[in-house]
Image (cartoon, rainbow, N blue to C red):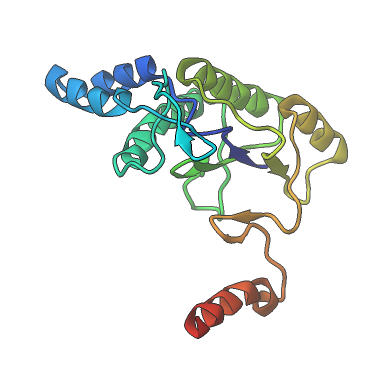
Length: 208
């Protein structure tokens, strides 16, 4: 099965204390850690009320989404979840999916805060995946938005097994119009129709 996750307010929930631990664990010395944490923690916000700014206030966690440094920091942060998945795979608790007989099993595809996980649709794999996600949420402060996340199963998966996995993960099946990184998550035999929206976007840009 494939599990497409959506992090709730991905950049806003990151805990600063854990990020400092991540920096140190990746081998950055004290000076570099201090510089980076000063960039992260020195942010302040001010709300406009009827056109006039109120007194500024300082947040206690999160990354600025418009900061050029933030995507790089977020990727390093999400590496923690990746390592949890790899450990579960090395223990044999999580089994990836092969696209062919001789291919390497795939357990995850990451692009910044967009993630898709692949595993067998059975109790052992779901428990291992849930354990990784729960541990990451507890450490990092992030939280999977289960209403925006979803599942997809291979055609041979039994209906009873599908229902069990859905209930355990508290997620619904992905819709046929689901997209990932701006592209269709599912394809039909009519590729021209599937990617018609790209052609329309390009034409609109050229006309503009």
